[in-house]
Image 1 (cartoon, rainbow, N blue to C red):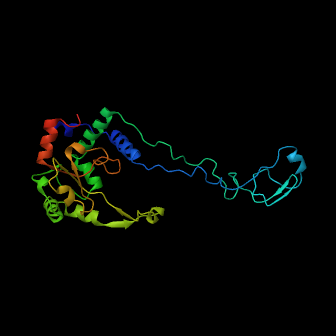
Image 2 (cartoon, rainbow, N blue to C red; image 1 turned 90 degrees about the vertical axis):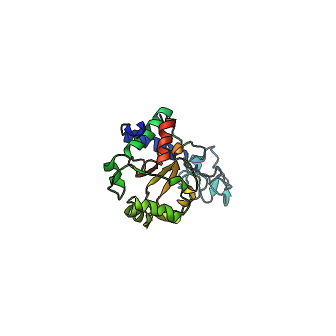
Image 3 (tube, rainbow, N blue to C red; image 1 turned 60 degrees about the vertical axis):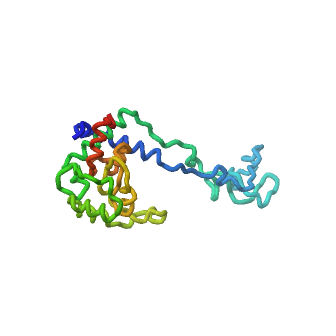
Length: 249
């Protein structure tokens, strides 16, 4: 096995690297710069305004002018944060940057640590319905071109229960069900290959199964929700390339 499998498992570094990737994929959001400010309003004149309105129960807020009698303004409050239809006091800013940086050495160490965690049967068993030997090594995965063929190969490796677990989908709790995220699925095994000869397309219709090239691994792919211990299936060529090219060292 390559030396990358001998790294010490550091869940804290794996989590930091995975969250760094998630933070850079986060979509910017914020309010319109003119939200709550599109009303035609008028502030009360400040010259002796408090003395002239004393005892009349009038708040000093901008108002939509319906009736104006000298210094007395009658109308609904608007524009101010405490009024109906007014602006927000401190809205989220769309220009805010959510990305979290991480050092290159720390990022590579997180990848090695996650690879080593995939070699721990106890950690893998906490997330997957599989109790066999790890890591799983198979020959000729790169040449798979059909989904049925890939499914048969994984079932022959003892992953039948794991594929059945990933095929189940549950309705998401909360408002996300109304926002295009109605169903939740389990994350299944990660298949690592040296080159793509059709296996990437073959895995698209296999629930829970993800395929990645060996030189494109990262902490998010190798972890289960930023926790190390994902079940991985390696091709022999991918292990040879990792060893020869000294990837993630």
